[in-house]
Length: 200
Image: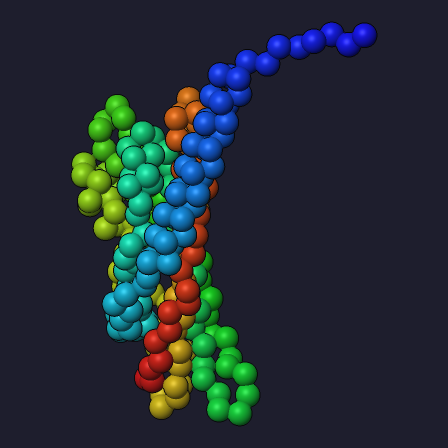
């Protein structure tokens, strides 16, 4: 003899509805993030001379999602990594690598002081404090006159190429916020390589 087990159809329907909702949520979330990642780009790459050094400036656009901004305001630390390559162009051989740099920008909101703390690798001083998120985003997404290499180490008349790429590392959340913004941890993507050719 088998024991008969009653089935609560209402609970099954309820569980199925929750599962469908979660699937739709995940699909919408990943679609929005993939679409956003494709929009992030590096613009206004500029080469200049400063203190006998070659410098580079650029900015990243489309790198902040509403979810990321919300997480940052709640105390999550976010870091952007910039990869910079300087190569000498050679016609009948592989381009020669001259200089490679990797720098990071980090932002964290101090809830006690009500300020955003920005740490830039290219600046050795203390973190920069700003009160508005917009100012924090500008500092995070831009590199200004970063010294690459002394000018006298480059050959005049030769052609060079500068390549820049940005990587947006996933948001790190305080433990108390993990259950609130758990999906935000998935936000990490990179831009394509952006290139600027020039000669000295």
